[in-house]
Amino acid sequence: MKLLTITIGCLGMILAASCKNQPKEEVKPQVVEVPKQIPGTPIKFDSSKRYIYLTWDDSPQPPGTMVCKDIFHKEGVKATFFSVGMHAFDIRRKRLVDEIRNSYPEFLVANHSYTHGFQDKYKSFYNLPDSAVNDFLRNEQELKVPVKIIRLPGCNSWVLDGEMKGQPSTKKVYEKLDALGYSVIGWDVEWRFLHGNVPVQGAEQMAKEVNEKFEDALTVAPNAVVILAHDRMFAKPQYADSLSRFIEILKKDPKNVFETIDHYPLIKYAVKDTINKKK
Image 1 (cartoon, helix red, strand yellow):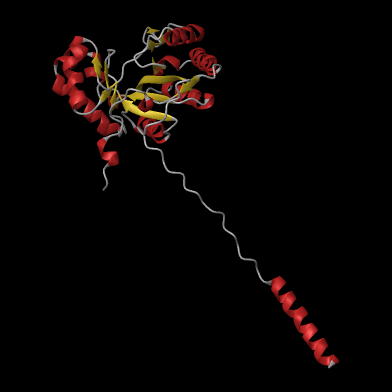
Image 2 (cartoon, rainbow, N blue to C red):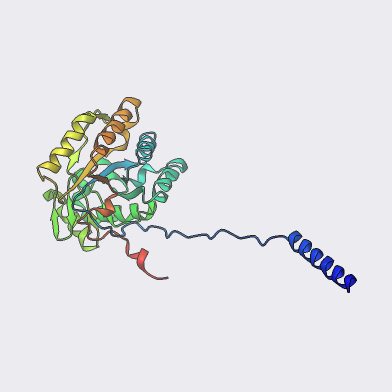
């Protein structure tokens, strides 16, 4: 009887030791897939906030485009690059456009025509509305622009939800774009330049102009300011510092929110038709 008890006890110890030596089942961490944000998806606006849209024209224009992109990223603000197809004439510049497009929702690529209005020949460009529209369509295809949002080169025109306005010379073009489902975005405040790339206003002056637009309600959409500038203006360190300072001033006001232009309040058609079609 004692021998049996001892044997059973030993067997229990052996089994316990054997269980301890068994490799533990590996618990794999659960992977949660975050849905990719699609450009043009509507957002909820907060009426207590002031929305700022940094819209920079003529990319890709290195090194200015890269400098602006790095500053926006460092400051943690969103921005839109209205891009020109003919400026993406080599692999390096095409990759820069790809980087911007793929970094959404931080940055957005929008349409600024393929030839920049027949290389700044605006009168000819707008006098040939069919050719102008085809120029925008080519740019959309070449740069894979993900939204139906356009800025007309050389003029401040708007096509929004229930509103169209702009220079008479551009009317035939923006009416055709509206019929095709495009929004056209102008600007409320321009960071002007001289000699092709030298900023006129300093950071403090630009911040003052933005605040005055908000305070006087002199914007196209309430509580929303669209700022126009050009990438090449900030290629040099002293002007890059001015851009950083400008953003830092605006960020001090907790009411200010930076957004990409697909989230402008009056956008009618933001998402390209092909995005929502099921394949």
